[in-house]
Length: 308
Image (cartoon, rainbow, N blue to C red; front, side, top):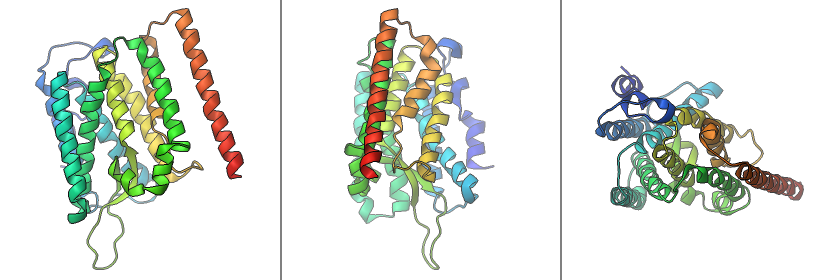
């Protein structure tokens, strides 16, 4: 039985049946330890898949690439999805986040001394865990669900600007090694090796720390406000997958593809009916959205004009 099949049998990998649900996801009483066990199981399977990525081939060609991306995007998003369901406290999130951050720093420090095929997977999992707990921690500043709407819009706009013209875009071009260390790996499964060369770890793409931090931030807030997490996952995951496929295939004329607009779009599509806005709030939100959209569009036009 394959690793993925075993995971599906033990934890259903789409763990909605494992935990108490809120909102439209249903109800029921289950053990508080189930989300933690499911998150741990997903994390272990994800780490094993990363460790095996350089040694076990998958189908090649365009569809093989899409399959690889779909697999290695699914697990980190599902880990965030499950992790925000773990009953935690502020202190617990701080301690867990610091432990994960310390593990990531240690792995970064020893990466040059060890086999990257072993260190990079563990580093990715540690960074993902840090994003989970610190994102959940920051989500506590939100006191009511309607604040999520402007937060989503602003975060998406800032990400577009950062990737296209700001810090992220410059970092990708000038310090790619640093960007790789601050990212979760999407590996190329069994990359070609020269005769006599050992299998090695190669990247198809990376997903930035900001994407998973804010994914945990928004999912954590959704869990606390009783929004339908299952529906949110199934809206967000395909859009994150689309962003990564666009990145890997190079369909778009620029290098990196900002992930937060795709996350925000999926979150809004899944939950817009869950917000109660006054007519004035709807109007103000629409005005902000139009202004930010127009600004980002103008920046793209200006960039294309300057480049041309």
